[in-house]
Amino acid sequence: MKQTSLWGPRADRQGFPAKEFSTGTMFGLGYKEQYTVIHDGSAEAEPFLFLYACGETKQGTYTSGLVLAKDPANSKSLRARIDQVATGAGFEPSDWCAVDNTCNFGDEPISV
Image (cartoon, rainbow, N blue to C red; front, side, top):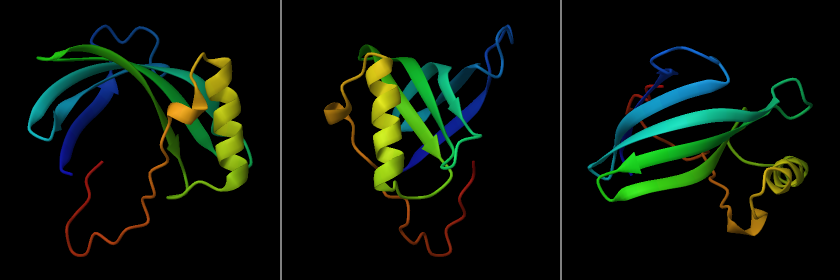
């Protein structure tokens, strides 16, 4: 998968950093997403942020969630904590997938 994104404050900057905006392309499809941080677990033993997203492509609108963590793979305890926050936010944890980011990218640069 090749994805290019630009993250930052929403245009009016109200609510930043809890309110953010992302735009980019994935699989050749452009998107625009508004994010809200619904849980800031950056001070927890296993740090993570839980974001709620409302997005839009030419194919329509959607809602989703995104969890950003410090470690490339979830431990069982972190996954349990994420599931707890997800349930509290109205998400069904069984609908989520965990992404293992420990793969080797070789010499290809990674830009964030």
